[in-house]
Length: 233
Picture 1 (cartoon, rainbow, N blue to C red):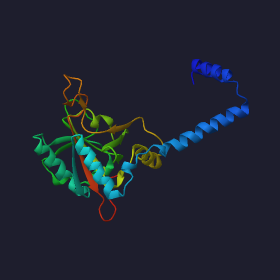
Picture 2: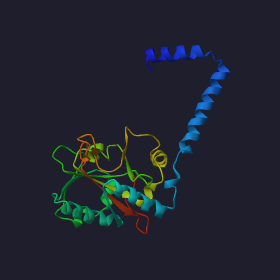
Picture 3: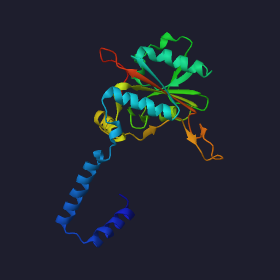
Picture 4: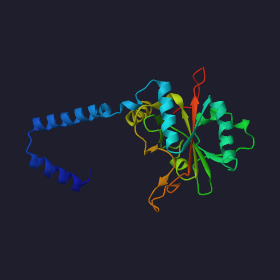
């Protein structure tokens, strides 16, 4: 804590005039409030059985111009990605997160698809990364920053492809953050909630896509295979 901040908080504490016992009770009240508020405001809309959560995610994602396709197992991912690029008349080329979980997909099945691993730069038209979770109540994907999942992949290229295992679709935002914390144990440098492609209505009150990020967002939903394998966080 900086000296200035410590001095300011010290004056506030002195003005409150609390005894040491009152200070302890006040801290306990704040801790209790914070613990209760984590689940106090989770909308009921997303609290569904797994298959219904997936359906709700797809509904809301498509409502904000997110393209969504569901496949069975990671082996189907490369074919879906290649078809997406052809559908939008894009080069068969992308930069992909260096996450080992994405290696479960058989990328050699698409020999015309040129893949580089790492972060994106200005020359990349399409980036592909792996989501930490999906939020059913708004059709949102959560991407946690890290060396294996560079944040620029979701923001710099005009086309963003996100792989999302269906067993990682939860009801609300709090559950998505909780899922990350339970597995990793600490928060990353940034948590990025992405709902649809970048847009703005500031220009002549007309909706424009791609103003501050990707013009297109494509989410590949991957059902786990029978043996439980598949890309995950």
